[in-house]
Length: 401
Image (cartoon, rainbow, N blue to C red; front, side):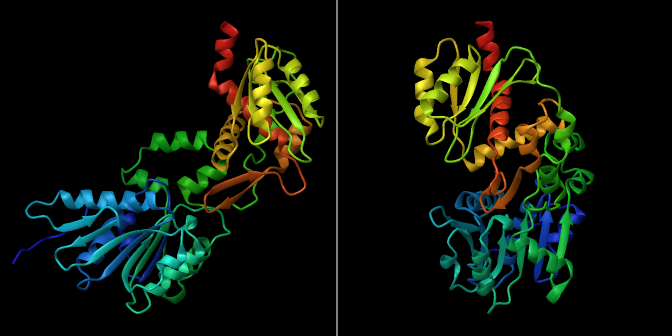
């Protein structure tokens, strides 16, 4: 009879205490790259290895590509075993079947809650729980009822308006015998998993709310301002220098078309805010931009406007930027980083008014940045576009030419 021995990978004490807590339900709010995923993979494998014959064990992630990462990593770990192969796998179904007891590990997406009902599951991990639908949590919970199977709920924090945050607070209060654990980047630094210099650089680079959520596992308030009060130290009178870049946010419905120019020192030196017919706006944009480099909102109605500007442009260079939830998030993170470092400057007025009101909310697919209902974010978007145009460096090439 073939014998196998499973060896747990080395885990640092706080990581092991959180994931291998004897409680049936352990909720773990943890920093990015702190080891929660690799520890949970080891935990699920042990549950399957030592569990009942033909038992089902689930790893559920927000989307299939994330589930596939865990599937690939566990399979790679099993491949390091010496002697006969200890499992068979199915790349289509994302399953790993252990030869020792025919237990099956399933790697699933939480996108469609209805597809998660029905099975009896003996252990489960919900990965990146704040991004998983609450309905999926309900479904997974039912699969553990008959087996009384344990579950590990892990992930970075993402605001307070989600089921995982609420469950974490219940676990923190030790309701129904649940366990709660909190792991920060500094814990991982102390354990030698992360480099201190890297975390210090992240703290300097990222907006406070982003750093606290990703590295300290501290949830921010939904609707908070990503710029905080940092923007006040960046307030300067309008520069009189020549623009090197422009950012143009084009109007939709009742919005304004806003253009903001930066000089070579990243000071705002040009400002335009109007509601006009497209033909007149194009003339104004061409005149204001002159021979500078411009990054233009090319989303939706902006696409034909960009085409027209590019056809009519003289020495100016117009490039398009497509707004999506992800691209806007990245754009605003860049602006927030410059504001935090006091590396961009703007006059008091419409720009600072919008910066002071700007907010973000958490969604299952990421962070949604916008102005409060009934207000505008055109100036913020134009400033962020100008800042990106400056950082891209194409203005410097144009200037040399």
